[in-house]
Length: 220
Image (tube, rainbow, N blue to C red):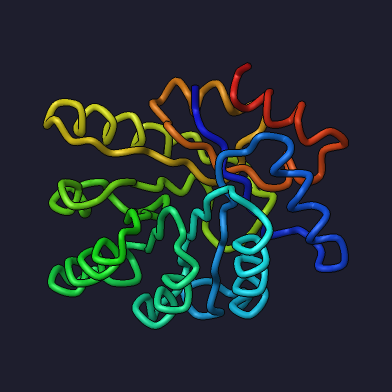
């Protein structure tokens, strides 16, 4: 059964606290914090996501799944480390250089936080294979990062399936997370591709019944 990480990207500020409580009651596994800097992606929500993450860390026992869609990974991750998230994931495309990649991975792990690498739909999986032995998670973007409500790009599931097979063939203990366009119509294909953790935003947060939406995705 796949875990559910709920993106809070589109939650309005006025009802944020009550929404967080209701999502926890719906038995989600993680709050997915989409952090954007206006450079790596167009939107800038640095202040709002930090506020949301801080609020959740005070009122909820559900783990934070922090997804950094930013160019200055080191600076922004330092804002989240004190909140003791379960995992911090950063984008390969924002770093690329091997020495810097390894330093970021080392720094996150040194704080007893799991580390993940994310890749955009156009990035070949070969680019990240050398880093897989050092990370806990790979996040496959199944849409173009930075905007909510997009349709899942089917070809990204081929990448997920290939990486899953590669990790099994090489005895790597890695979780695979898929992010974008996941709903009741696409979820089965995502699970079939080998996804361990599903990121879903508006499908859950716009639902009349959070619990039912979560159950639909988990396959309960």
